[in-house]
Length: 188
Image (cartoon, rainbow, N blue to C red; front, top):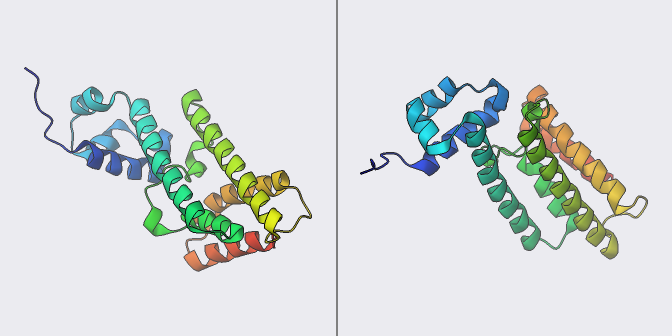
């Protein structure tokens, strides 16, 4: 007869996701995970597998929420510039803390192939998303046509990744919001 789990798996995932978000995969130790989860190592390994397995689970869970929230932004607005601005603001808004996806700053340096693949897949998703939103904006005249939607999408993605670095340099939210508005102004 197996023992029943005496902990809430989703709450543990939330706590560990926040830990990975703040420290990154490489700088998070199993002891850190033990400390934040309140579980012993064997419970962690038996429930979630290795640290890498746990990171991937946190990442995939976070990415699913992130994509749902982005889809909600796109569905609730017909204005392409507003949609892009809101997507960029996700990464600077404290109420969205817990997304693992926008925290590229720590994981880009990671040499773990499965983590690199997750990051590349996410960047490809964002690039395609930005291309589509920009094309729609260009078709209705809300985004200028001086560059192609692919060029602007790469600019937005690069800016998005730059915002991640800026968050660690400049903690003032209003300055980060100004960066977002400057990015958007290029498209007008």
